[in-house]
Amino acid sequence: MEDIRIRFGKTLRQKRTKLGVSQEGFADMCQLDRTYIGGIERGERNVALVNIEKIAKTLELSIAQLFRGV
Image (cartoon, rainbow, N blue to C red; front, side, top):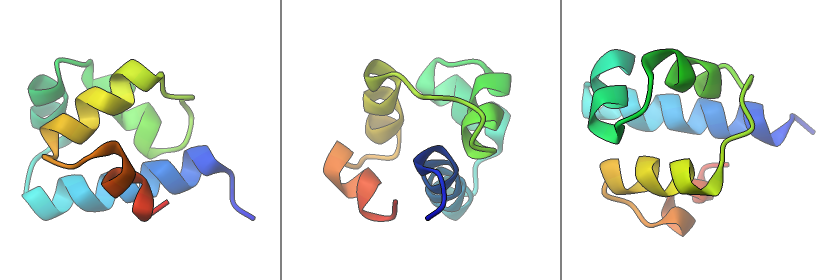
């Protein structure tokens, strides 16, 4: 099975691109660094719960909805 960080990153990228937002724009919306978002999408980051909440809120999803694709 694929690492959860990679699965989460793929899900995040799909949802971000569906919004039509660049990594930089999305990072600004989340109040996170662009390189951090890039690292998440590549599965290189172990994302903190606080940041998962920021990402979900920015996508206007619950945390459970965000993880459905994972």
